[in-house]
Length: 149
Image (cartoon, rainbow, N blue to C red; front, side, top):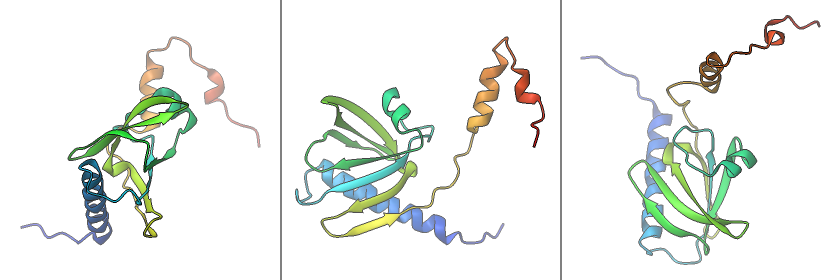
């Protein structure tokens, strides 16, 4: 049997994400006092984040949403949650995987937690760009030239 080293940080993050998931599930089922307010910050570059393109353009790395009075259709699943929020008087649905969350804050009880994310497995942004560029017929030679100091 292979012995492993305990990754306490990973286990703590998993437990914290479980707490956040439970809180959102309670919110979905209207079990939480309206005094609570949840600020949720997440990485928009996570491959499983699904937000409108204009929001991704405005928040290319990270975004914070607020769940208090004006949100609709909160749906909590095993690995993510989705919610409709109003942006410039237009409802937009966002789907956020739990493993993209970096911060969670409830000012009503002064509870705040910051999570450490592991890098996503799979292709990096650079690898995705390389694949896309292979289909292009024009290559910029400046990308390959040495820069003068």
